[in-house]
Image 1 (cartoon, rainbow, N blue to C red):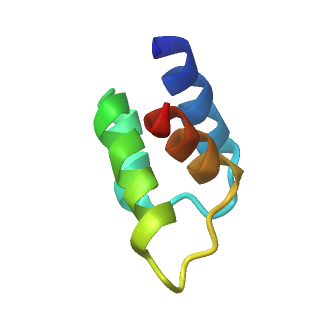
Image 2 (image 1 turned 30 degrees about the vertical axis):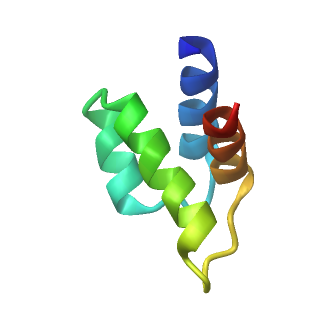
Length: 63
């Protein structure tokens, strides 16, 4: 599981549209909290078009 979180975090950092709250959690080392935050954005934010990193994190949480 940790490898998928690290992969998702690195994908999020490479993304052009990473939300600031997700970035802050990643830089603090709070990878699980960052993944939950990104998954919520991909799931409930109606105006948000989820990027690859958000979909990757959301898919990992759904497993």
